[in-house]
Amino acid sequence: MAKWANDKVMDKGLEYLAANATRLYACGGQPADYTEATGAKALGFSAITPGEFALVNGLAGGRRLSVPAKADLTTTVAGLADHFALVDMVNQELLYVTTTSAPQQTYAQNTISAPSWDVLIQDPT
Image (tube, rainbow, N blue to C red; front, side):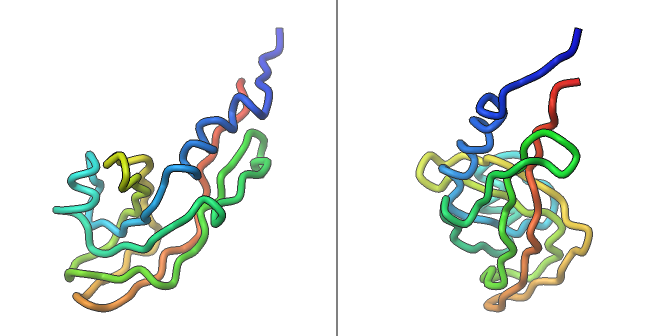
């Protein structure tokens, strides 16, 4: 018997992420929680709003939430940004973390760019 899920079922988690992420942080290393993402591992950040995300069909099935590229992440300390984290500043929650294929050196009081990336929920198999 085949497995199937309605797009609405898969969308809810992605919609929650888009509705609640208020900042995109560049991090040096993978943060384990909100405190690390916004503190010890934080190298810089940019505000992000629900309207910047796009919820669409996945390229190979499923659903994906496209996170936009950001050219204005303000850096606060020097380090190597190898992860990006979406956080909910209101509820103080770490929502999602990804790696980057092109880590960037950061410097205090500078800016870096974050590439666009996708959060994917695959169709059931």
